Length: 387
Image (tube, rainbow, N blue to C red):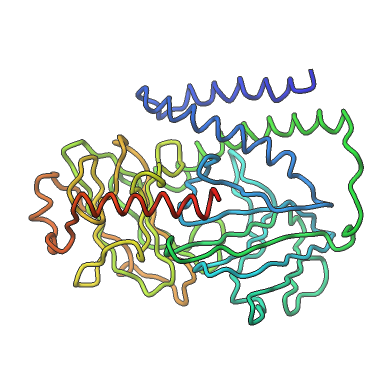
């Protein structure tokens, strides 16, 4: 059967999910099978998008095709490229806080992180008064709006990042290969489709195994319920720092993360499940940007992670997860960050929150206000990601 290689990969992928080391409960397994469904969708899409001669951008991850602790505030796009061809990227800049470009020499694998060969944000390109731009990537000499592709260049990644979900608008972006524009690819053949199904199966297994191994590299080597000092984000992203860790909390505990509100244009916090993907950020408040969070009078943002509702505007819902990952990102920075810019973490008994939060009254919210916050999240995500 033409599809047999992919069918075999799905069977193997189910085994990877079932035997994952962190699975302790039925909920863990149910979430794993849900994660598998999204990964199957993504793998087929990515296999068919492998068109280096007639390229187009695909959404690398989204609400239903999650991977790699996906940022709820970001739209991710990528296109496959080759280092000996010239590509023209055109678009119109939206009003999002950040728009960045990155060239990688491959894809993530269970044993390796691809090298970042180039990384920059839209401050490095010329954008006209109406927001339109044209950027070229190729083997030629670097110049204004032209970026030289280093040997081994294989993927162009674009990230568009929101700080205010309600008001910021996404832009548009397209890619074409300069010397194939106006021509057409050869028709599909049975042999080519057979190879696509095989590639899709390899992508599926690699995707699952890679991001189950990823936390071992960057998260689980530090004590639980701590976060590291801000550091340049692994992977070579331009002008981005991050602070990360992993948590384990009982139902009668809460974690208070205190961090200064940054002057950086983007500052965002999120939770991740043990599957190393974002938890439900559409229907629950499992992430906050500095724009969305309530800042205390002393200029600090105090996030409260808890399973039970503490009646606070900055409650981060655990949604049944007693274990998982935490990450803060700062983007579009104009300076390096130090320890004083990073978070302080404290685990406290849930009932002691009023005493432990110095501005507890300022932080409180009503049930009606909370429902309005969730309704706004639902509308915003559908508008920018699912519309």
